[in-house]
Length: 318
Image (cartoon, rainbow, N blue to C red; front, side, top):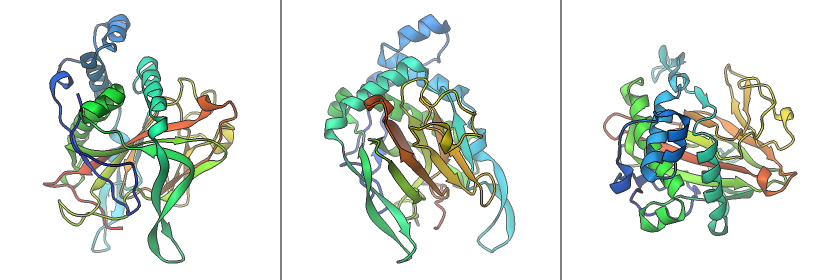
């Protein structure tokens, strides 16, 4: 019910993250999909097999096509060519359902004593280089597999394993070969903004690039799930018309040059919302986050980075 591979925390001080080999074993097998109506589906969530089948079904139902949107862009020779839009974003609301997202939030909060100040990287204009920094008011950890990891957070592990396998397969059916993703490897980070204005600087997730199948940072696609309480950031304009002024808790994902150059698209950290975008291309940040009502308002996010397929996947140079 987990994935192999060791790794420390979620530090990305050099633009790289340890990847985990995803291994399905024992309880991670199972088949079928959702079906059976709401009552049966709810009962299924009490077992690992039921939860995994539930996630498979939600992946099958999700509209992921926006992340494969085509656009004219300059190729290596400087000529305009039709390619997957580097700034494409897919947003899926109510992805897992209230019961599972609530259980995942409880597991995430139970891991808080082991979380550490979150490290990341950003582009420094003055030095014209990638520099490491510590995010203020943000804690994070990497979810590990194996017996100990699964015991600590079974639903988080099941989600990571199942999404890695099935979302990569689904996307690979509609993407060109150079965008293909591994279904066996991933890296991840569970992070919480504590409030008091904690934020993320403007950055691209993968600024390191991966020159070969075995070297460099091979993160290709980011899948970000907000594990807020159901109903968080509701009652406001719907995506893509959201604004940081809509909710005093803030913590909005802001994508730059989306949908057009010079534009900024704001995406609320709505509970059970999944966001997908290209790790090696999209410039984004997170607006200041606040928790006026205490712990319940803290912004929790579980990020999975999908790794470029070793045979055909290519990471953009940055």
